[in-house]
Image (cartoon, rainbow over all chains, first blue to last red; front, side, top):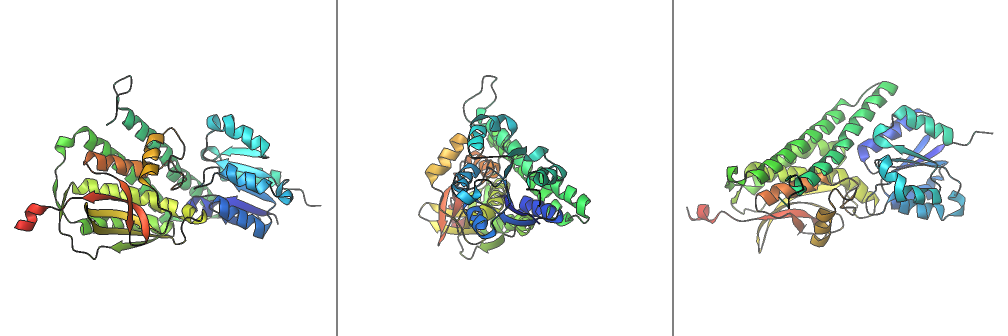
Length: 128
Length: 242
């Protein structure tokens, strides 16, 4: 069972994604903001992060800066699942994202739960 | 409305429309994913879907009202209005959305301030629009460490400028300058009010538009130890004399 940190500011969406990921056999820890996500990562030691970039007060990119500053989290896959559309992501967000190790970008309004679950499975380390 | 665009369309209404369009993606996304989750696992939370759809419809209604009032201010009937009853009705309209977000609504209308002069429908629509935006943002504000309780208070109090009606929470104060900066960034930034909400903030800008059309201001406000946004209304002095 993989541990997933879900960083999603909207409570209703978080509940839905949490149910879907848990239903797919993952252990999920949810956080609605950057600070809460760092604390949750510290406590849960996730195998993968699903991250919205639009958060309150601190952006998802600011979260990633801090997250990646810890050596033990530098190799953890990060799947960006965001309301930022592709046309906007392909600018400075993408450059920053590459620098900070974003493994996959998914545009939330066009990403079904099935696609999200499939991409999460694809990014998780294969059990030995 | 603000200066004209090249085709004569008011720029502000275009920016507000963009903001509303962006905001509407959220409830539609919620409904789509909740329905998909229901198909995957069986059992759909119909009450939440209904509250979400109602919230989207309300945003559209309030947007239409704001634009209509701005375009035809002469058609606006100002009447003697009880702020307490407007807040009570606004609370009723927000109840199901608040429940689905786990936010407790409180009503603080104990003071007797007498009636104010206002367009009742507009005032109520502005408060509901503002309230819905704040309800959706509160859990994320709490996670950002700017608030600890998921409670929103609809309240009225007297200030030296008049009678204030607003919505308040245990969050960081948003200044009038930040609010003005947000207005300038509306539709140009994905999160013009980033300290307040993770969305486009359309509900706040719709409330702002409605209040402006009524010659009122949306401003930062404080109620006891809570911070929020509200508007100052003028007492109806004529009625007092009767």
